[in-house]
Image (tube, rainbow, N blue to C red):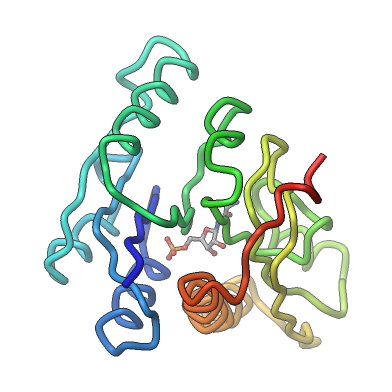
Length: 198
Ligand code: GAR
C-alpha cells in the first residue's frame, strides 16, 4: 500500500475525496500526512475529523520563499512516502523542490492546461465565453501549472452558467478524476519516464 502526502491551502474537498477513496479501497494507498501552508485551511478540520495526521508549515513565518521551501522539503524528506499530491495547494514551488520530487509529485489544476495557468480559471472561462472547461492532473515541474500531463476531465459550459455552478461542476469532476489517477499511480500503471523530461 502506497503512502501519500497531500498538500493543501484551503477548503480541502479534494483531500476529503482522496481520504474517502483510500478508506473505501478505491485507492491502493493511504494518506499518511496532510501539510498545509495555511493555518486556517478548512482542510485541516477535515483531516482531523477523518483521523489523518496534519502539519502546518506557514509560508508567512519565513523570510523568503526559499526558506519556506527548504523547510517544506526537509519536512517531506523526514517522512516515508511514495507520492505527493498538490490538492488545492496555492503556492508556486521552485526548481529545487520540484526537480527533487519530479516523478513523485502531482498537481490538480482547474482548467484545461495549457489554457489558464494560475488563478481565477472559472472566471476566465466565463469571461471568454468558452464552450468547454475542465481539470488537469499533471506531474509537477518548476513552471507554474505545467509539467507532464496525466489526465484531463472536460465539461461543456452551459449557456447560463454561474460562477457558483461551474465551480461545483468542476469540483465534481475533480473528486472523481483525482482519486482515480492517484490509484493508477499507486498501482504503478502511470509513472513518469524521467528520460522523457527535458
Ligand atoms: C480545486 O479546484 C483545485 O483544482 C484548485 O483549488 C481548488 C481546491 O479545492 N487548485 C488550483 O487552483 C491550483 N493551481 P479544495 O480545497 O476544495 O480541494
